[in-house]
Image (cartoon, rainbow, N blue to C red):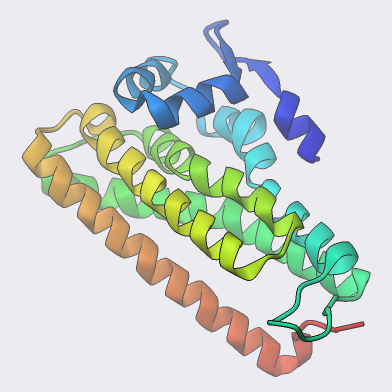
Length: 216
């Protein structure tokens, strides 16, 4: 799955090429790449099947490898690993949760848009969230090497880059002023944080119901 993510090159509906290179370029030149992405008018199914299903798989697949074959340790303590079945269950659950979360956040964005004078399609909202999450998806590769301090450091950098992409993308994709876009972006960020807390709460409930990780 990771190999396919690295080499995925697919044609968009307009015949243009969409590849990992475009996603990387977005992180460095968002002012140029966001209009290009918006012009392609990618449908929801297209963005899911040519981009999101690959990139969303990076964190759970990497976490599966890291938690079963590499393991992690706290300080100088023993190395901890999960059983393959336990790690597989958690990874598949996380993968599905990511795909669903992108769509749910997109619904919230479309619902909030009218407040800020925007009228985006649901597909534009999906594009905004999916591509804004690109740094977080790529940072997921570190899951294969569970070094706590390094993973936390890179994750913080990835979060900052994703927020930057979001704030750059909203005025371009929503076609609103910078002032309204700032407020809209802040609202999206708030909803995203609340959603994350909700997912953590659901995880705790499932763990308390006997679905906690199983260590080797």
